[in-house]
Image 1 (tube, rainbow, N blue to C red):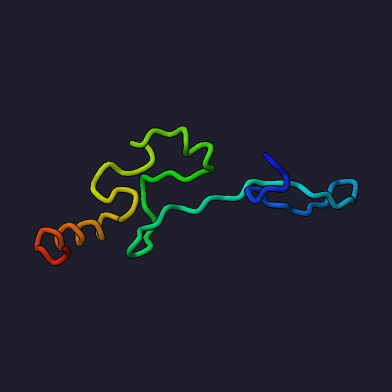
Image 2: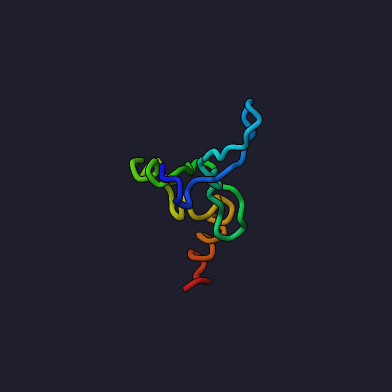
Length: 88
């Protein structure tokens, strides 16, 4: 963990000896959200790139059409539009 990089958060903390020191914490990752309605996507993990890189593709997203991009409600609407020929 590099201390000057942007992937760590710098926090000032008081020690028991009444000194203020700088500690470094990893930033928290946001949840994956739907591209249409911004709802949180269940079944899609989040984490640092080093962890996500080692996951297999089947664990990074839900295994269906538009998996990992759209929630199930928006996916159903999208598929029905495609079937009816509304979208090109």
